[in-house]
Length: 151
Image 1 (cartoon, rainbow, N blue to C red):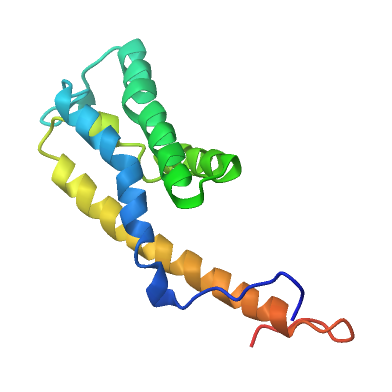
Image 2 (image 1 turned 90 degrees about the vertical axis):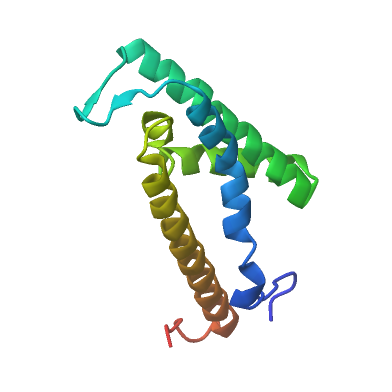
C-alpha cells in the first residue's frame, strides 16, 4: 500500500451525501418559492424578461448554492480548501440538476422537480461512491511491473 493512501469507506457510510447536497440546494428552493413564477405553466412559456430571468438565476440559484456549498465545506472540513471546493461543487450542482429551480419556483411543478432531483441526486451519489471505490481498489492493486486491471 502506498504511503498516505486510504481505502474509501464502505458504501453505507456515504448515506449522508445526498443530505448535504439537499442542504446546498435548499436556499434556492426557498427563494424560488418566495418569488413570483418565471414560467407560465399553463401556456408553457417564460413569463419574464431576459434580464429578470438572469437576475433570478444569479440571486436565487447561483449565489445561494455557492454560499451554502461554502458553508457545508466549512462544516465538513474546517479548511479553506474544503470551503472553496464545496462552494465550487455547489455552483456546479446548480448548473446541473438545479438549473430549473428558478423557473419552477412558485408553480405546481415544483414537487415534480423535487422528486426528479432527489432520485437523480441519490443515483449520482451512489454511482460516484462506487466508481471512486473501484478506482481506489484498482490503484491499490497496481504493481509497477504489471499493467492495471479492472477486475
